[in-house]
Image (cartoon, rainbow, N blue to C red; front, side, top):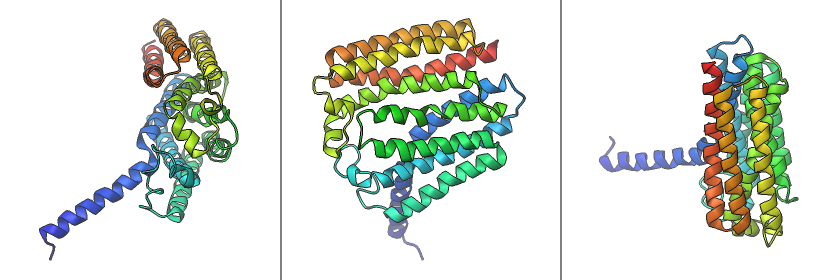
Length: 301
């Protein structure tokens, strides 16, 4: 017979167990990835015949792969995570779960996502999903310990999700899908450089030769911020030129792009944690607002 104490204890353990999985699968990052997948599908669906059921399938498959990749990344970086303040309380450094279990579970879920897409969406979307996993786990993750420019490698898997959505809707990958890739690729560089400035000490302790670590005065880091924030403006405007959106999106992208450039310049000038946080916040708002303008304009036309 259960007592009130035993039930309360069970509730505590259930909460602790569920929290481990939340930390492993990184739901906020997965949600952002699925947002870009969904936008890719929505835009592609206006150029092809598809159904909402395909959207559901591509979101499920991509979500599984993204969650599995998050767990595998933590498995691969479990030792360095112990030395960094922002990661030392993750499930593996705190030994709340075994590395073997995380590896098995992550690999199963990630591979399951690819197979799900192959079976229910199509081989093009599944191939792009597999490429996302490979570049994230076997290019970006090990490269973080080898090169200050690992951020560029990491921007590749971060930019592929909208192409997965586009391929799910159209069955192919064309120039318009590559425009979405370019926007996501360029957006990530100032965003992650800002994070690098904020957590510079952590990355140093973790042994990651990030650009901010090997660039003491921040001059090169600042120039990279401004360069990529500036490059995203003309690229984002080609969405209208390619017939993917109209006037509403064009002017929204123009204003958002100038704002992103402005915050990047401010961060580059001071290279302080305060200005870096402001740039990071700007980047976090920039992307969903840009995608929302894209979708609203396209669907309203």
